[in-house]
Amino acid sequence: MIPPAAERESGAASVMVRPLGEADLDRADEICRVAFGTFLGAPDPFGTVDYVRTRWAADPRAAFAATVGGEVVGSNFATNWGSIGFFGPLTVRPDLWDQGIGRRLMEPVMDCFNAWGNRHLGLFTFAHSPKHLELYRRYGFWPRFLTAIMKKQVTDGAAVPGRVLYGELPAAERPDALSLCRALAGAVYEGLSLEREIVAAHAQGLGDTILLHGAASELDGLAVCHCGAGSEAGTDVCFVKFGAVRPGPEAADRFERLLDACERLAAERGLGQLDAGMNLGRPDAYRRMIDRGFRTWLQGVTMHRPNEPGYSHPDAYVIDDWR
Image (cartoon, rainbow, N blue to C red; front, side, top):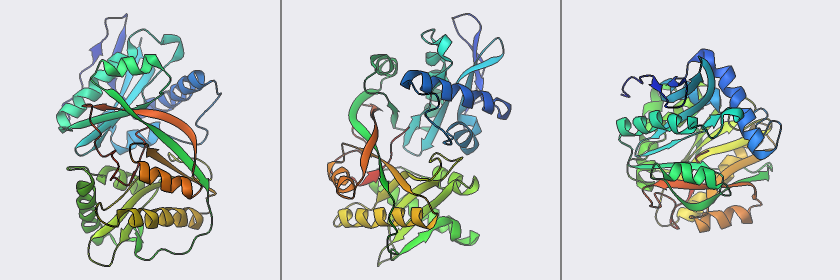
């Protein structure tokens, strides 16, 4: 359990940090869009993508607001993937940039990671921004490989043998499915768990999770997919928030099957674009996506604490981006 988040008063004027409430979501979403739009020079870089409401609903205890005079001026979100923890988006109203509010919003998420006991922490940020890199370096994060956010146009692929959707399972079978997912994720990186994302995607109606079974009883792969507007995908997009296959011999072949299954799901949902993030510390997985027609439309860098690869190494066949 996360300890109750006490209000924190900043040394700068009347800045306070408290839990983000449901009544704050509209304002937090507006600030998130304006902040990224200002930095990127785009009026609304997210469109129908929703990061604020989806992440708040996944775990309201891990969502935080900064306020000035009682008005919300920024927010931040922590995510618990078992042994892995990451945070974001961290956003502050642009007219209040460079006043220490971002640092104040880091404090409660670091408290979350301490309470959860995550041993590898991370974030996704702008590789070209010294200000962002320096802020997070102060908290022990170190930039490693670039992460490519990639997309391809969906083709109507063939059915994939062994593919099951979590949302189509009878309720009585879902605990066993989650157990298989924990075992697969733990084989990729000890203690890694995607249960939060699988349950959130189903409970919020954001999309579905692909379970890819092999010839034996083991799970060959899983992919948590967001589909369409109101999710983290956006209109006409299927976004693979996380995907992984069982490591070891033939992992590359399993990865190809998982990509087939993701594209098939997108086609079934009538979505025209498939998005997926790939850390360049996984070079063979990256090359295979390029060979399939994926192209990078956004690029950033993941920062890690400690300065270790985690599951971003050449033998890993994982899709994610920590945005």
